Amino acid sequence: MRAVLDMKTTKRGAGGRALRHLGERGVAMIEFAFAAIIMVTIVLGILTYGEILANYIQLKYAVGELSRQIATGTDAGDSAARFTRAEAQVKANSGFADQCVVFESSGFSGQVTVTGTYDFGPEGCRMMPVFLLPTPDTVTAENTFTAL
Image (cartoon, rainbow, N blue to C red; front, top):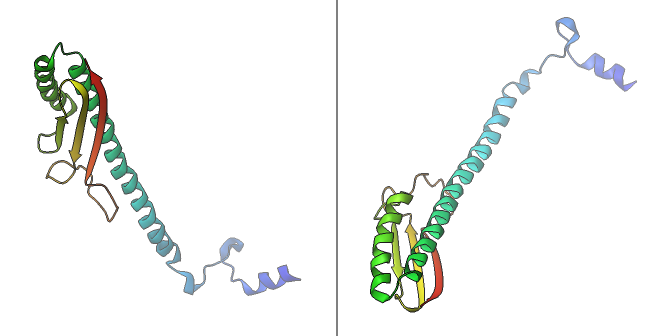
């Protein structure tokens, strides 16, 4: 009996297809607008955090390379010279701008800590714009080892 009532209350067009009610026009467009805002925010979040993760991975690799250069030095003076040369080479090869990244070493013999800090604040250090997403201002990678 219910199927019969539905058939009577629904307006049918040519070919028996149901016609849209006048009050439902544009509903799909409004629903798409809400869904599109959420999807664009998710995509921009993925891209922004992907950039941060990529910079952290590059920074971690650079700190490891600088640590290796210090560890392979024959003495503290040689390790310091190797660190300076490797720092310039790492910055050139990784694409880090001078104003964006800072590498430091606590020393060149004994217990050594090499720290790399990438600062997203200066102009040109961040590729993706921040769209009301909580993102870090700096990313730090650290490596501690004992040099001979």
